[in-house]
Structures are given as C-alpha cells and as structure tokens.
Amino acid sequence: MSAADARTAAADPFDVAIKRENDYLRRLDITVAPPQVAAARRREAAKIRKTTRIKGFRKGKVPIRIVEERYGPLIDERTVDALVNGAFRDAVRRHDLSTIGEPVVSEVDYRPGERLSFRIDVEVMPKVDLARTGGFRVKRRDVDVPDTAIDEVVENFRKEHAVLQPADRQPRSGDVVSVTIREHEGDDDAPAKPYRFELGAGYAIPDVEEAILTLAPGEEGRFTVSYPEDFGSEELAGTTRSLRIHLDDVRTSQLPELTDEFASEVGNFSTLVEFREAIEEELRLRGEREADEEVGEKLVDAVIEANGFEVPPSLLSHYLDRVIDAPEGTDPEQVEEARRSVTPVVERQVKRDLVLERLIEDQDLDLSSEEFDERLSKLAEARGKSVVEIRRQLARDKQLDPLRRRFAIDKAFKFLIDRSDVT
Image 1 (cartoon, helix red, strand yellow):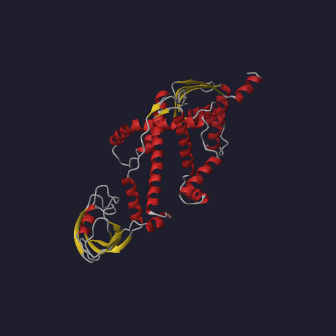
Image 2 (spheres, one colour):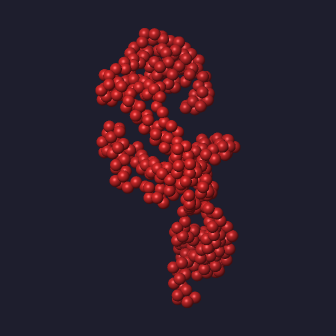
C-alpha cells in the first residue's frame, strides 16, 4: 500500500454502500480493509492480554502467542463486534442517517488477516416530500352558541361559589357527607377511618354510597359491600366486606342567586347580562378555534393522501407501546389484539406528526422568541395573570415546549387553510 493509500484508509476506514430499499429502510453494505481489520484485532488481543491470568506469568505479561492460542476465537468475535459497531456509528455520522429501531446485521464474511464485509439493514426516519399542500376543498362547520351552553357555564360558576350548609335529613346525591367507616368482621376494635366526599361524584364505590343514603345524621349501620374487580387496592379488589358506617354530618350546597352582584363577584362584570355576553363570546371563540382545528386536521389528511409515504414499523411500534401500556402479566394475545385494533388510528397519528413536522420545517413556521412571548402575553391577559406568572406556571408544569409546538401547529393549520378552499 502506498503512503497516499494508507492516509486515505486511515481517514475513511470503512467502505460503505447505501441502498434505499423503500421510504424508511436502508441497506448498508460495508467493507473493512485488511489493515484496519488487523489493527482492530491487535487492539482486542491487547485488551484480553491485559486482564488474562495464566500460571507462570504476571498479569498483563502473558506472551501474545499464548493469548492467541487460548483466546483466538474470542479475539475474532470481539474484533468483528468492534468493527461492526464502529462502522455503523461511522456510517450514521458520515451519511447523516436518522436511524430508528435496532440495526440488523447479516452476511458477515470474516477471516483473520483478510478484509471484513457485512450487511446492516436499518430503519430511518422517512423524508416526507410534500409535493402538494394546497388546492383542497373542505367544509367548515358553523359555530353556534346555544343558550343552554351559556346556562351550563353559569351553573358551573354557581357551583364553584356555593356555600355548604348543614342538612338535618338523609343525604341525597350531590350532598357532601362526613362518615366514619370501620371493617366489621367480629372485631369492634378495628380502626375507624374518617372520610368526607360528595355523593354521586364517584369518590366512593356504589355499595358504600347506597349504604350512606339510608342513614340519617348521627346514625350507624352495618353493611355488606362488594368491591369492583378493578378497584385500586389489590387487597380489596373483587372482595366482599362487612363495614360499619357512621354518618357524622350532611351538608348541602346552597347556590348563590343569579344577580348583578354575583356577576360582579365572579368576574368584575357590571351586570348579569354582561357576564352572560362574556361567556357567549368565550364559547364562540373556543368553538371557532375548534372548528379551525377540525379543518386543519381534514387538510392534514388530504396532504397525507396526496403525498403518500410509508411509516417505519419501528416508529409505529414505538407509538403503539405508548398507547397500549399493558400491565405486567397481561395476556399477550389480548395485548396483540389491542395493538391491532388501534393500529390504523395510531398510524394516522404518526403520519400526521411527520407531515406537520415537515411542514413547519419547510415553511419556517416555528415561533421566534418574540412571537412566543407575544402569544404568552395574550394568554396571560386572558387568564388575568402577568407574563412572568404564566411563564413560571408553564415551566413548572413542563408545558412551555408543548405550548410552543401547539402554536407552531396553529400556524401550520393556517398555512394549509390559506392554500385551500374552505367553505
């Protein structure tokens, strides 16, 4: 080998040929020249020699000839592993491959002292080429705010500002009760546990709620209750227990009257009419946003259909793992059936994410720091908080990056809407 050839081999030790099998699968045929194979084998032999103990020789001083005699196959195995791993990392770096999943190595051809060749099949993130992003026709639903929707919001405000008043009667659904419960299995000294919750809100199992509804304040009864199979406590799930329940207190919610004064208290509005108008406007804006998002999703589907591409199985499997988080011990056949049932929906989600990511990148739709701050200011104003407060809250909840992403998707939807016929 000439000096020039040696320098070239040192700079580029691996000969890599990449073949595109489909949108996401790449085949790498890799060859390692004999000098690099020999050098890698010497390094692996030296590592083994350094830790080898053989009687008559000090640790690390065993003659390399004896190391070769005893550990030749192991040296070869480690040499191949080191070169395969090194070649793969080098190919990913040099050719900027966005790999996903585990690479599959095959067709290994290795003989000590000669070149090494092998094949690696690996999935990569597909490059989504958006040849068509406009010219579609979709229908946007009309946004209407019925009085019943406004009434529901007003009623929720009343419940939030309700005052609990004692009730000297048997409880009803919606009342807040204070109870003391102890297990009764012939042990009157069992510890009593106090609870306070709203009936009908799902805080207690049905049998317990039904038992409480039969008591008056100050009364106690013994009841047999059955815990559901999916109850949170494994010890109690699916069991039947005898409980002694004492009803300590019943309180009922006293709702405030719908007056101008109430409107002033909940939102600094002058009149109840002004309060309802503000609710109507908020519901209308929310409906408009939702309608725009629905149109955006329809247009994304149109873009997916117009610019077909395949989803890498590894990526689809990763999404499915997040959706189907089966507890340990679940029947594998049930898990597989669940995965099959949601695969079409999940595959659409993967394609949606890839299309939006490409669109945001191609059209430079990500938010600048100034744009993001401006959007945060509007959000803070709507919530009656300062920008510092809203940013601190979002950071604490780890929602800053997701919110920035949400704003970028909003811009992507607007880009698609502006390029299509929305009626």
